[in-house]
Image (cartoon, rainbow, N blue to C red; front, side, top):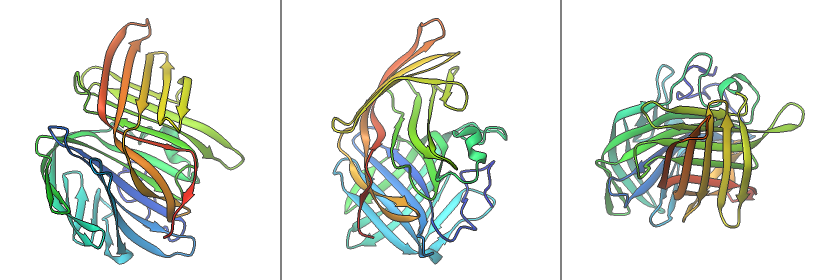
Length: 324
C-alpha cells in the first residue's frame, strides 16, 4: 500500500512486476568544483525479475556508474525514509557509499544538516498535488529536500571530492515508466541569494488518451513561495524547447504573479531509466546546466532575479533503448 502522506518512503512494497522506484541525491561542493548525483533504487520488469541499483553521475568527467545488486539486498522500513542496498545507506540525514566493480569504485560518507524539506499536507502530499491520489499513473514525482548543507567526502576512482560546506537536494520517482516526453529542471545555488526552483512538464497517459501536465515551484526560503501547476489554475506561456540546442524557456503565471525561466544544458551523463520497470531506456542528464529566473508579482514588479550554474536538467523526447 502506498503511503500517500509520506511519499518519500518506499512505496513499492507490494509491487512485483512493471515497477521502479528511485531516490535522487544531488550534491554540490562549496567551491562549485564538484557536482555528483547519487540514485539508489529498485526495478522489476514485466516478468517479475527484480534488482536493486545505485547510479552515479560525476558532472566534471561526465562518467556514470550503474551498480547492480540482487533484490534481497534492498531494505526499507515502512515507518520512515531509509534505504539500504548492500553496504550502502541513504536517508534524510545523509548517505554512505561502498561500491566496487569493474566500472570503478565509489566510497565515502556525507552528512546532511540545515534541512529545508518540501512542505506537504494531507490535501497536498507533494508537488503533484491531487494527482498523487490517482492510482494508475505511469510515474509519480516527489520532492524530499529543497535544500540541505553537506559535510563529508566521496572518493570516485581514487579521487577524493570534498563536499563539506556544500549543499544538496533530494527528490524521487516511482511507478512503471518515465514519461515518453518530458522536461525536468532543478536549480539551487543561485548567485545572488539562497533560492530553489523546480520545473517539469510531461505528456501523461491517462485511462483514455493523455494530457500535458506541468508544475513549477520557486522559493527564496524567506517570505516568497510560488507554486505554478496545471492542477491549480496556473498557465504556462511561450514555452519553447530545443532538444538539439538543449535549451528550454517559458513563463509561468497565476493570480499571484509570474515566473520567467530559461535553461541550457551543459555537459551531461548517460543514465538508465525505466520502461515498464525494465531499466532499458537511456537519457542524458546534466547537473551543471545554466538556469535564469525572473519572478514578478501580480503588478509586474520584479521580486527576484538570479542565475544558477549547477542546475539539474533533462530533455527527454526520444526513447533510446539500451541492453540490460
